[in-house]
Image: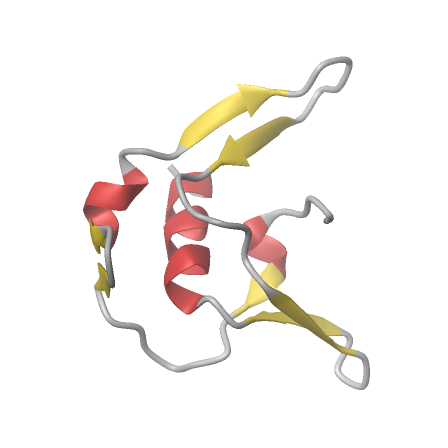
Length: 81
């Protein structure tokens, strides 16, 4: 498990559905995301109410791409607030 900025990850699809299967609208799930201080560090960590985002490293392009587009969208929107 690695911690990286959600803004450093690309989407794997051009559009996403606005609802999580069991959690409801993305906008509602975003209200459950918390920001936590990291002990001994200057950065903060985003704590979502859902499992970690799965990533693929596309070595040829040098990018990270998600398999979880709705989760990434929620994290990116939260990070930009």
